[in-house]
Length: 313
Ligand SMILES: Nc1ncnc2c1ncn2[C@@H]1O[C@H](COP(=O)(O)OP(=O)(O)OP(=O)(O)O)[C@@H](O)[C@H]1O
Image (cartoon, rainbow, N blue to C red):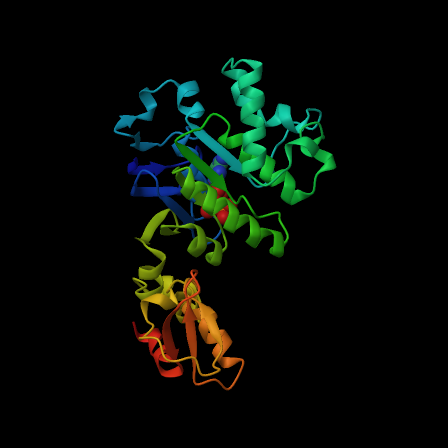
């Protein structure tokens, strides 16, 4: 668990608090998205977790230990860091880039090579093709995959990601968000991600921390934040389409009624969201949708009314 314990950061010479009495608990194995307007203190908050910045007052605890008392090298080894401009070493092969931390840790070559192949596979790059390439021979999205693999190399318990998809085109971005989220859940990391993009925060975050002027305004699950913004600022930050965004967090299986005999209505998969189902039903004149499970059986039915009522859940 990471605990930012009443942390304030005041950069030298500035009368303003970049981070103002922030108290934030990040449970082990969860992903927290930090979001808020430019300059609200997101990056400063993240950089205090790996001691790239030190708090002016307050403490940062990782698993109960004050990180000011932990050896910096040990701390950073336990924290993977992914930034927007990946920062790969341009003259080193992809394999050497991914193996940066294992090399620092003095791993044997064979072990390090195995780890590189395993990680390239994990992030969807073919080791046989990619190992020997140089960073400039990759697309932006591929470089981001390498940066992510490199951060995971020594299996750190914590991953910090600062606008990791900021420089990526929208289509690749959505694919990488999905893939990285699935990987991070599978490997059970504690993740802090800084983003400007609300959809990204909703998709990646188990919880979202909304900041303004260095302060924490709301810290909750995406569902809860979208359903119950704490004040007008948060409400306007979430935008007029927050009701629709919420529907993309509700699985159809949670609102469907008993299956109806197949009658020619369209079908949707049981793991689809209410947002997907509404988009489908509004695209035609159907009275409802059959919900089909992955094993092929009919699992339930969604009438147009059921779907329209989902917004009131
Ligand atoms: N090294 C620094 N020295 C002085 N002030 C700084 C420094 N870094 C950040 N600040 C100030 O601290 C405040 C918070 O900055 P920070 O970068 O944490 O915000 P942010 O929410 O990440 O912003 P953005 O979304 O624009 O990246 C801002 O007012 C910024 O100008």
